[in-house]
Length: 261
Image (cartoon, rainbow, N blue to C red; front, side, top):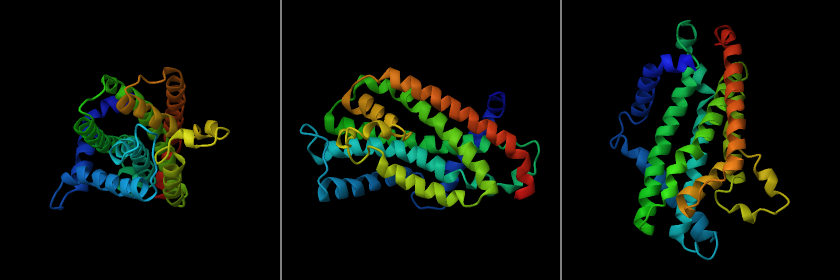
């Protein structure tokens, strides 16, 4: 933790560079960070809301409400997915940092997570504006959104540290995480409500790290309810353990990176 604080300026500058370089040379620049989630929202809304006619219930039985519910789930998956997919290349694409003993390699994961967080903030802004435009209000419970998303950031970093380390020694990890990201997309209650899952299988849905967060995000943003503090506290503790285990594993294996890359 002291290393993170000591290198906070470096982390901030690297996050800024990552965001700017992603859109460098494009005509619309940062506008793409707004356009991409909106485009995907329209595509998913058409496929699942119009073609498959999936709904969330009587009160939400229209495409606008469905779009809001769908988008809330997609932005949670997008954060975790971006961290997961980028993790295998964090060390391999920064080989020049590996041989610099003084460079804090662990910050690469923090930078990756920070970049994903930037896109999450953009998407949340779009969600709130869309909700305000269509519902003419924003629930006060939205103030709990950072609390709900914090454990997801922690677990994303923990998994990223572990995956980034493993990818150095086992290059197949990149293929596995790509498949896992797609699996999580359809095994999370994004395109369907949790109540649509057979009751006997619902407890297993919570083994998915995204399920609880998606449900809680919808509670505080869409339904105007306070989070379920009990399950969220358990998730927080588990996320903290996973984060520190991932960090410990990364630090334990980092000395071997130079022999492999």
